[in-house]
Length: 210
Picture: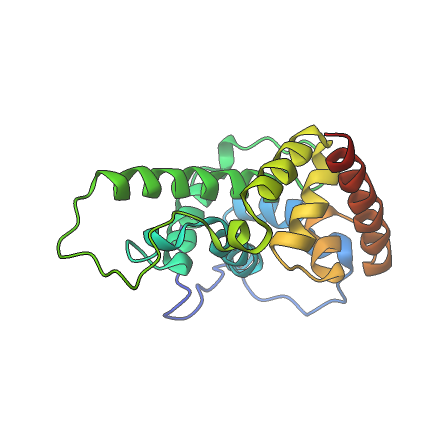
């Protein structure tokens, strides 16, 4: 698979250009792009990377503990993970809307865990600065508290896959309803809005009963 070059221009498709045609949601859905990537379409590869890099960077920035940030920039960490993951997409089996986003998010989460373990094994190179907070909380954990975050994570695990991805896309990734419609195969932003509304109700119920 050809490499993704976000900072040095886009890769060109080697097939002859065709007249532009109107596109609908189904033509730009992530799974459609995935099939094009598997067929060697570099334009689709660039679009897929551009779609997921910003949202997964926003998600990772909330999950990566502050003390681990000096190890690698969050955007670089996510970009490197996506490049590695996209190279193995021929082994990915799509199972429903939102499956690709969940797969890529899982890859980023595994990388974050690896970075945290590696950072903990790395000795400090200089004296500790007493003005720097020593806790290992992530921004998300700091914002809502450790107990609430643990409750939230447990509730997420009890949700079905589509409901869970809708919650994460809206709350943690900050996706617009149009972006959620694209990634989850919804016909419109309004349909995505309804999906998110129902998902948040289910999340609240699980957190209340959990």
